[in-house]
Image (cartoon, rainbow, N blue to C red; front, side, top):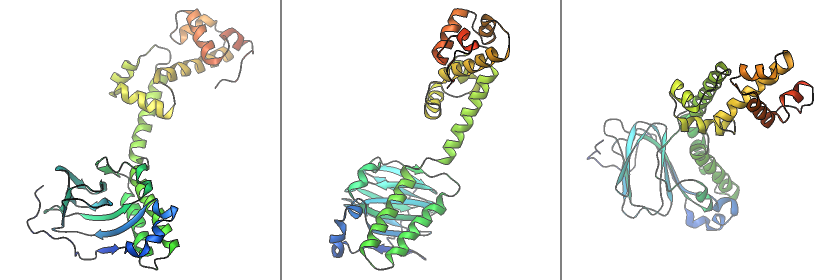
Length: 296
């Protein structure tokens, strides 16, 4: 994307732009709930055609930019990033940078300058584009920034500065710490599909590679979602499903223990019994005779 030759810093129709006179409120800035995250400038530039800003030495605050529509370019230390709608980017403090709107589809951006002791808890130095790809992303971000504008249009009181700090924390958490709903939904769907596959093949012996090939998912991805949602490896989860089924067969049928094992893919009765005892806590015989603990 080529930048416009007609450079323009500020002054856009319907823009909002507030600079806090920080020198007048240095006493407030020492309050523990304010110095954690201290806002210095905030703005909204809608349809910011020819918007351009360049700083050779950077500034002492972090610059967070959230694009609500259109697109633009951010350059940090001569590396270029293209920012699109529902994406955010943080420019590290004291870092050479420039940013500008696309000529053919100029961005609309919410932006804020800030600093504070709690900045260490957010990955603000990583220079990554963060996508906020949920249906209500723009609504949430517009709402939070609107809170900032409304409070800053009132009196500069200690209480309002504390409130601003908390809202800024919500904005950063929305971008960096809130789980992405669409990604969670995709992972949940994959988890469901894999568990259904396991149930379908509960009478067989399947490997992680079998699951990976059948469902066209990488083994590392399968391991990751099972660790996240089941707190165990996928094949351990599969063995637990088998043992749950073994418990049902032992309680509800007269099948021999060896037959139960074969029904679940274990030709070796002794191996099946060892696995069963390891998972359930008692042997298959003890379980059938009622000498069992509650299965977990």
